[in-house]
Length: 519
Image (tube, rainbow, N blue to C red):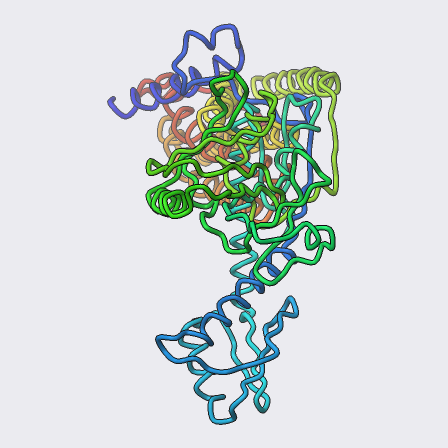
């Protein structure tokens, strides 16, 4: 008895989850975790962007870091300087020439010790070639993809865009679907910015003639000033504080009621920022964003608290956008929009209306067929079919799944499988009665002996759905999600709920069932 009550309770709860989706006006009366199932891009309308992650640029930056690490390892005064010349970075590897033949082995050993297993060190005479291993490059690319997806997600979420779909596609592409977004231009601009911030000291020893020549001396960079694109600011290449140490950033107003961006560093960044502002009072430091100087203020006094303020003639929206960029972190590699699609809400509305008509007609035909073929048992199957449909919608909403056209196709396919899952035990009952088995026992045999067949078929569908989810993308995944949920609800309703209805009707008695006499 307890088992039957539990089955009925779970069925009612599953149907209850679908109420906000079927009647959105009732959604405010439900808890926040029971909300309408969101519609996908093809139903609600919106924008779709296909972004390409430029991993070549990222690998060149890694090679530049390797160049600095090799140079530092060779001139380590604690371990002894190894004399070398002709240090070069080709973009894929770093080469150098060791001056003393006897120090080639020593140089190789030190580089391997300092740089670790991610680097290959080979020699040809006195020339050493240092490069990242293929495994390390693959890890860099995979890490850049995962970080880019997460950063894009944080930036879009910070803009208040609801139900975005962001996923990897084809190795170096990111598919972004934004339901309900009519104009994706601002989002394109925001998610495509690298937003790499760093703090550098300004080189005050550079003359005007050197600036006009455009040739920066070693250790110095001439960077464009954002407020005045024609002006160059000489800054030291050394990064005093990295934007990676930034913990938080918010748009605010200064004392003159002008929009600014406030920054807050983590513990490590706070120590470095405090050291910078303490040791260089009276000097200028540059706030560099994406290789452009955002601001170059003079350090008036030490700033020990790790809190700063960036001003630069922002509009309020500009300050908010910059705060979002800094807060979400720098992209590990540039992003390029290579495909853009916009789906109008009207097209989605037409699709929904057509889908509703098709679904209603199909369900009516199924219900009538089951009732005509199997009598009272067919009516039980009809009720179970409706419960199954409601549970699919409710569980999908509970798990935060997004309803798309392929998802609707998955639901329709599930309903077809559910009809089949009901027919199998009914036909087995008919066969048992034909063999002369009493009706009550035939009902028991029909359900128990068809269970394995039903489960085999449904589990096969589940395996297919999981494979589609694992290796598919976009619409394929939406189809796989609804199909997987449908398999679970079909097994529950057809094997358990139908049996509850039949047992209640039979009530422990061998009754004659009309459809069994049909030939």
